[in-house]
Amino acid sequence: MTDAKARQQDTLFVTSLEKGMRILEAFSEDKTELGLADLVKVTGLEKSAAQRYANTLYELGYLEKNPETRRFRPAVKYLEMAYSYLWADYLAQLAMPRLIDLSRQTSQTINMAEPIGTDIIYVVRMPNHRTNFGASAIGRRVPALVASSGRVILSRQSDQAIRDAVSNWPTRQYTQRTTMDRGAILDNILMAREKGYCTTQGQVLPDEVNVAAPICSIDGIPVGAIHCSLPSIRWTIERAEAEIAPLVVEAAQSIVPSR
Amino acid sequence: MTDAKARQQDTLFVTSLEKGMRILEAFSEDKTELGLADLVKVTGLEKSAAQRYANTLYELGYLEKNPETRRFRPAVKYLEMAYSYLWADYLAQLAMPRLIDLSRQTSQTINMAEPIGTDIIYVVRMPNHRTNFGASAIGRRVPALVASSGRVILSRQSDQAIRDAVSNWPTRQYTQRTTMDRGAILDNILMAREKGYCTTQGQVLPDEVNVAAPICSIDGIPVGAIHCSLPSIRWTIERAEAEIAPLVVEAAQSIVPSR
DNA sequence: TACGCTGTATTACAATATAATACAAGGTGT
DNA sequence: ACACCTTGTATTATATTGTAATACAGCGTA
Image 1: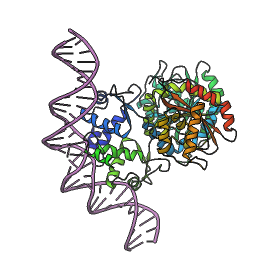
Image 2 (image 1 turned 180 degrees about the vertical axis):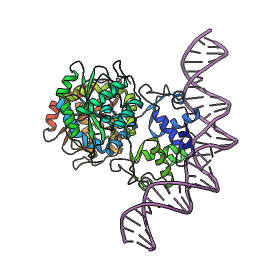
Image 3 (image 1 turned 135 degrees about the vertical axis):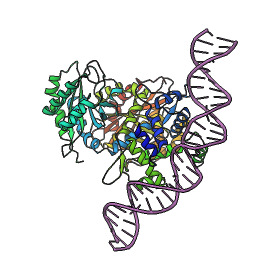
Image 4 (image 1 turned 180 degrees about the horizontal axis):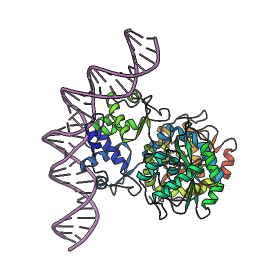
């Protein structure tokens, strides 16, 4: 990519650091424990480079090493970064009390998400019923077009932005019911714009009904979303709209960040 | 330190990466937004180095830059690392369902912590009453000697280890009531060993009563702790011991990681 | 207006990361 | 039990890459 080449030239870009971050980022859902050879495959680094960078991160406490298999995995220190972020995130600070209230009112799983590129990322999660753990962890990224939170954030943007997103942003089939039809996604977003909230069913996890409402800054820019996930065994979209949506919308509207 | 010198020599240690991580770690509770000059102060790097490393992290998406003040702050990408960790953390996976149950049973704030050096770090947090947000965020580190979770983890270790920790590990005065008397801390730990749980009051946050129980692996090694925090306006230690402690202990004992 | 303090940009230089090795240790299949 | 392959580890001479010094521009303060 020309992008990488431009960086090579740029004396303000330290490629060594980038390589290190590549190692840090190599771990994911399916890759929780990686040996040196795995790291080479995932990151595309030279064997020798992978060795040195992994070793450095190990010595810095970011990676643990299984003494038997000699494979690396993320150390608890990964979590410290989350703390630094959350402390600096004005929106999370502001929203937390309302999220706690909403969690108690509904007795259901409440999440808050923020946009990041073409995805949304979960910033606060308050599980209330047993569910897939990994799926309900902080920091999870999901394509904005798939998640109800992402769609409802889009619904508050310009027609232009919506159309651009719907036609160009990536999707991913998480369940059998995940909508891959971009026309249907557009309809859902436009519907959300009218109603003020977005409902979906089984898009990311099967057997889940979701209701999401946008959090907008004082000048109307959508900066995040609250979303409630309900077990579809007990909840239809209709019932969710009647009983849950008003509460979610109210909570979201009560949060008005100034920046 | 000779440690740093040893690293200088080590061809397997990439000092550039260390410098980059220093920038990443520069942000904390009191330092949520740092300019270049601030970064120089906090990290001890040269101005030119701070400039290049911060810029690199900015381009990689780890830092945001306030266009007006030109100061940096952590970007949402910080949270992705939390996700990688949580997904790889066997204990968190295992504990989550029990934590959810416990949260519903008690209707109180439930946390899970893991030891890291002389601290404990909060891995799962399920707030149930409005409280200081930053204090209840994932990834927060607290000296093990101060937190009830830390003490109860220590209580399952050898006399030797306990005495060593109590006399050498760091403490910190969070509130007026934080116990700085190491003798009293030792007593509290020994009491916890007898009872199977640890109770404290106002150690980290004022007006909070805490009950913690250890999570032990199948070979008896303490690998974490569950802890419940209660508003001291409504809860005395006695009432917490009677009504909450048994539930916390039961939940903790039901979690038995094999490794 | 002059000064100090930011953040930004460019350079010549050498320190540092590099890639190429070679070796040891398990694991696999024959 | 064998050779074979893959994995992690360690060492070196080399030049690529990060470095520190420097200069400049923008802003608020005195």
